[in-house]
Length: 491
Image (cartoon, rainbow, N blue to C red):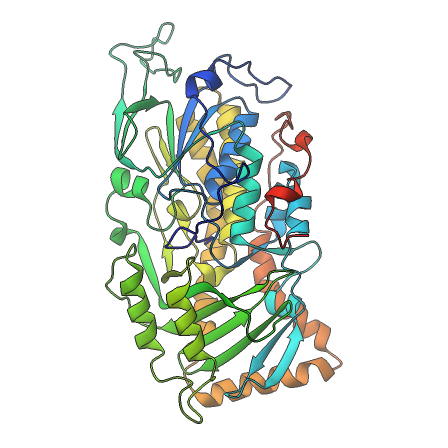
């Protein structure tokens, strides 16, 4: 999963970050893009995407290139740039390259150098290269979730209507009163004109509007999924742990390194990425499913503090930095907290509504694949919609068929890694430290590193991408995201 912060961060409002609104009417009357392969409709179909994190803007990028008129609605008042570091691997690297954003990702790379486990005093007791910690090989890269969100937003903001500070309140199918002309089988087209099939949507702020298609790319706690498919409890599978991530002062002087400290049932991490003057904290603890409001950070902070109560305040009581991390979490503007949870559904579409990314198949941060799955899913869904022309149900079916195996492999990885992330006893922790300490000196260390990465790489490559030719590379031709609109620490 690629989560945003529970609190919206508040970057300075500049030309680069200020929400841009374009009229759907203007977009719908612009000339359709051209080329061979899947052809753009003469009148672009209107698509509403809920969610402006990773999956939503990535889909908007592809749909615009195929000639669709796209609106993205986002509950947060502005682009959310919080969250933790995320990996781009395997098929996701190929999608990023086809999008024309791979170089932007590489420029904003975390450039992590090493990872180490520390004892109660903060002394490094086992250190390994960061790529082994992250199971990265070849062109695999790592980027802060907020940096990737900014790259995608800057690639789409001129061509896509963004509605910040708003949310969907109802979704109602609209069916024509009579069959479309020339269709004796009674099926209808999706032209979106008056009297044609579509979806009527109401919002908290904006006036009601009709769209041809609606996409829920609004994360683990998807509003679209709840409105169309029912309460999330029927789809949610708790993996037995919770995580939190937040920015913090870099008082440890970290430079592209991550420090881990393990206690029975708990894991603590602090790290810094390339050029960022701040550091990040990351806390995980094992727990049955807890009851709390996922939009109430005060409740979440109380749960986090209870889980780590007393740690680091007495000799042999855990890493002495833990109280400082908890204090930083309470002060952070990008505080994030949620469960390690999967979303499992029998189908991801209903009528003219379809789910994408975590809303459809959240694999939890334990998988390390949520962001990659969002990018890949956006590519697959857009390509199938373009190929199916005016038969969205066929496109949705092919999208699911292509993605199901990929999702299943990564859900299995999430279950495995969620169990391994925290251990039960101090003996198990000492054994893990010992293995990490001796690994750099073993003649078979490269084989061990390959084995560590094997499962993750299998998940990253568990899909073969179709070629969807002739989506005009209009955005790619615009060149890299200008340095002025990248974060100041992204060289």
